[in-house]
Length: 594
Image (spheres, rainbow, N blue to C red):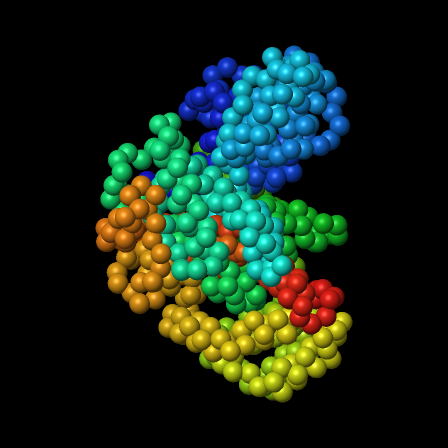
């Protein structure tokens, strides 16, 4: 059975909302209990893509509040708390209990609560004489945000800057690594799988892989562990492979423009937690949800924008044809099918009535994507985003671009951030860059309305310096054959498990095996399922590429993609800028975004 992270996390949340009682086939508890839900901001973001208000009502939740808001007492009602285990939340819980805000407290922590905090909770309850109000305390291991069936984020901000900050001490780095390991452990506990772990040698990826391997080993020693697999040496095809990378593995993907629908909507319109707001046709802002319940989004998210526009037109014509057919059968002649004036025989009448909800839903989806596509088209024309995407792709394939072409882009359409991203892509993709070229690039960026000489050009040149040729040669080779990203190509090789010079040096960990045997050949594949995790920020370009890889395989394989946080190109460049300042490069001002 394929791993379905969204389904598993939703099941855990449903059980929690029902006071951790078993739920029946309808997804509700046998005995309905009305309750209040209290959460913090992180857990609110976690719930947002999974649970809607109508779902909360279904599970007996009548009121819901953020934990840091002032709340009035609600007597004779249990409260379900779902929060991160930190000092401020513990203090709020103790304060709520001491003021008898609710009848009983069901405490659920998003990850394992450390013993010192558990002791603080216990002593606070004892001192306020409210220990009897605490019904249960649960570690839920749910500290990650699932956006789609195969997409998750740990929602850990700026980890790329933190891990590469030259002033960061060992202790700070260890804390960041531990946070990432904790989040990944929650994902694996929710899926109830113990994977084979692979990663490149050195850097944050190996640090996370090694620490996660040790965390899994320690946990598996306990009798009541969270993983349901039996036996110590389950064959590799029954277990997934976890491939861990960090953002420097393929920096360009975090910066480049892309012309496919899902990455465009995220990068240009700011999709967050599966929601976005765009100007409506009749003025004002319209908010939309884009998730697995939207059939058009699921089916067309990986298509290039012109194909999406054609598909919207096709769907609209099909809708009109179906409406005309219903009207013809029922004798109606209205342009829009609204269910009024229905005449005709009973059979056609019943069919028409039955088809009304489905037609209405289809029209809403078409209207939504027509509006989104219209706003996108305006941005594409105003900023020449199609040109940026094509030229950046050509650069990565050819290993550079003609200087005049480069300068014409920098002096043409696009925001300052678009031009800055294009300049960095040029630096990354070009084999060797003369110093005069760097100066010319800086002048061009300045003349393209940049506020000042950007430290990012400095940063990119100095960071890659002597090694820029080696970095881009690998990227060029990986892109030139079949448009696969380096990440996708590597994951494909790791899932295949055949000898391959690109991955032979990768470290292998098996938390179930004795450490001495972790290089055994049976652990190297092939694998039907993979979890790919990117440290330092991921994006919808990589997610889409990995899903295409999984569907291309025969038989179809299954790939889950996760990251510390999902970033737009502009957000990632801002992190590079901040890192450049920390390295003492360039100016101290942040890059302009418009």
